[in-house]
Length: 173
Image 1: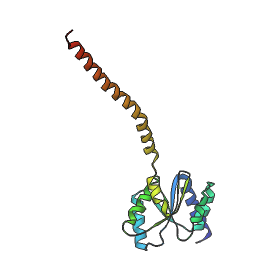
Image 2 (image 1 turned 120 degrees about the vertical axis):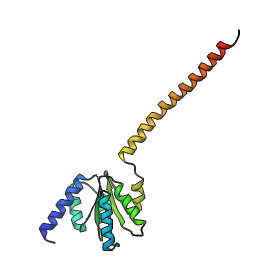
Image 3 (image 1 turned 90 degrees about the vertical axis):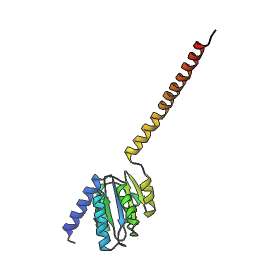
Image 4 (image 1 turned 45 degrees about the vertical axis):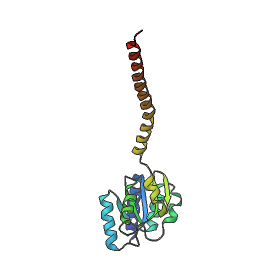
């Protein structure tokens, strides 16, 4: 690879890193060329951009963003593919689904909204994380719950009170 091509790859990766809130670094070296192409197709359909690059170029792109990626640099060994997605769960779901067929792309590291996840054992953690919309929905449900309880208590108490008043009014003196 010529020097200019390397600069272009670093510039492209840096642009993707700057506009992405999340990305994954995976190891697809155990996959055959056919399986790797199949994984690329599945990723593309899932809205995930998969790029294979040399670790030194990925490192330079990470460094050029100015963001501290902490221990992520240590995971840049061996063969690396970098996955970009708007939905931080999409790559994890695709990797998990792809593993059901017996193929194993390994998760090296992930960066999600200023948090770094290192190692393949973090895949289930990434799947368990809630999106911003899910968290907002949970908060709204929690805020509505006490109001619903008060309203239902008032409705049921009102019905009891009306029944008592009606019984007392019908009672002969």
